[in-house]
Length: 450
Image (cartoon, rainbow, N blue to C red; front, top):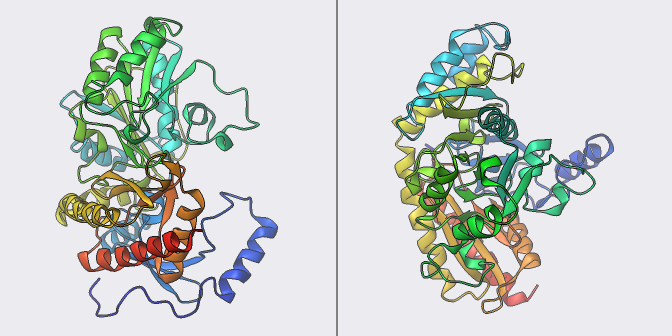
């Protein structure tokens, strides 16, 4: 930001009186979206990497509005594109008619989707919807019923997406029966390997396990449509798969004619220092799903599939608002901004520095059990004991609260992991300030024995 003002700027201890009043009004009439919230932050406005609450406190945003504001809040080029589009056309349902904006965005999007195979695009409204489309497409194309997903995964809260999700029982409790035909296998979470093996000596046994204990015992591979995965698990704890995993998985999938569905909703749009998280692993998925950072806060889901896979018939899957002209304009601006401002490079550079800072802190702070990630998608897992790896749940939550009160908006994922995901526009100055606050908070919590 072109300003000499220093951030964060806490003018009244949060939560302030205005925030508390808004929360009181909300609790009477609004569905409990995600309670308990991490802390009582009530946002009024935001610009680039700084968010301002209703009491005038200004915070460094280290979660990007849940990994949505990748190009920063209210980027002027996004605003310009949206304002221009609003004055021309806001909606006319691409389900029944056509307009050029969907085609323009699809052409631009296909330039950044990994792989050389010809592809087609389906636009929806969210990450969950992009996954729903992918699973329906996979079953339609293959005429097969079974889907393999992963423990620790999060794919959304609509019914197919919820049936794939396995990061917390709360997402599934009292909603059964769920969509049938979904089986879950362990994700390659090397820090907490279910088989107590060590990478790379394990030779990626977790892939062999799918073949030997699922396909050869009770899930018929010839009836399996797809394997759905996150290249870096999001809600599961910001867990990147180890090198080589997806190449070995692809070899197994190709053996049985199974599609690979990449959920790049969180890891996509430059978050990891590449356009999509799967690019770190050198494979081309059959179907790629993304959303969150695609349209800078406007609702847009994208399902990109190999052209021969997207062979469903006319009207088989549609959505009234998918490919909304205003969201398309925002998304095209986002792609241009990431290219012009070299935000992929900045994400890689700042992410490498953040990992280094946390690993240095790990040398003296026993609470820090693991530091992992790619680009600006970094997980710092806190543990009570490094040998037992007992999750430090209360400690993690207290670190988040203390960081917030000092001016850094940070949230968690997994059982006891801090989620480090600032906008891709973050500067080194803001990074250092935020890290000083977070690391100081970890020291305080470790000392206080929360």
